Image 1 (cartoon, rainbow, N blue to C red):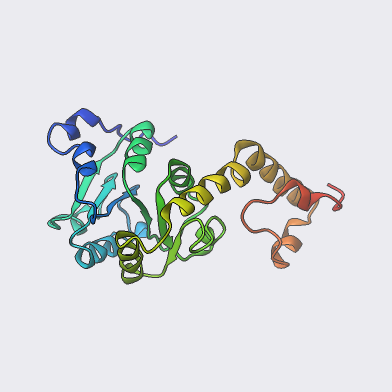
Image 2: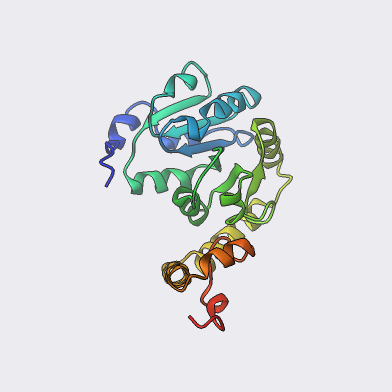
Length: 220
C-alpha cells in the first residue's frame, strides 16, 4: 500500500478555505485536479491552461517532483495531500474536475469525481473514452486550449451542466458499481483462464467494463 501523507485540512483552511471558493463571482470556474505531480500527469498542461483562463481558480490536491511548474501562477494553488473524504468534499464544492494526463488506467479519481457531481474535463485517451461519452457525461479534450474552450462554455452557461452531472452519476451507478466491477473482473479472469482473452482483445471486445452478459454463451 502507498503510505501517502494525509493532508490536514485545518492547516489549509486557516488562510485559504474551500468556503472562499464558494464565494467567488459567478463567472469564475473553480477547478480541481488530484494526484502526484509527475510527468505522466502533464502538469505543464495545467500551467498552460492557467494562463489561458486567468479568471478561473485551479486547485491541485497532491504534491510531487514537478510542483515547480505550477508555482508562481496567480490562479493555481497546490494544496498538498488530503484524506479521501476531504478530496471528495472538495470536488463536490467545485465546478470542474480536470484530468489531463497522457496515459491512465481506469482512473478511480475520475469515477469518484463523476459520482461527486463535478463536470469532468479529461484527456482524450483510451482509458477515459471507456468511461466518458464526450458532451454527454463529461468532456474529452486534446490539449489545454480545448480544456479552456470547454471551461469558457461552462462559464457562459452554454452547456447543461446539470444534465451532464446527472448522466455521469447514473453511469457510475449502473456501470461502475461494486457488483458490476466484481463481475467484470471475474469475467476477464475466466477469459484468461480459458485462453479466450487474447482473442477477445484482438476482436475489440474487451473495452471498459466487461459485463456478465457479454460472457454468456462463451462457455464461461
